[in-house]
Length: 197
Image (cartoon, rainbow, N blue to C red; front, side):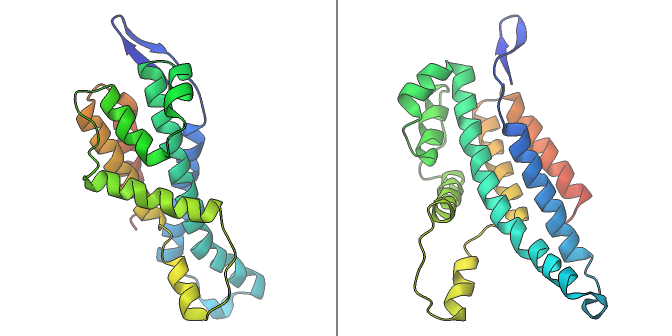
């Protein structure tokens, strides 16, 4: 990642952000294909039907997890480019990810993401679902209806893409020099144009 200096831009940091966003984009495509290119079920063998089911369900889990990973890595990187990695690691990294977005955006700008904003609400919701998945605890089986309700908490890939656009839009509004926010917005909007959901 680059950071803006008085002389222009210089290489500042590197990490896994590109991989995380690429995985989300690929899951978006898989899910889009599932929605728009439904094969004739009668013509499929049992293994193909199982794979088709995976193309419906897996992208929800993967998109939810990797969207959260992207946002957590992004806010660390953003703060580290604005100050230093050591500062963020020592003083900010102990916060939960939604709080990092509040503190870091406010720390380095005149204004930050507001706790009452819709942007912050979607960040909190994403990390709540991510935490439920990452720290999963088995539960007693209480019927298929309850099982379906639990799956409904997952974000569809299109929801993840829209969520990241919303967060990056807000960051770019707060910090117009944040070129990675703009690049992320452009990349995700292009994806949505090429693969309508």
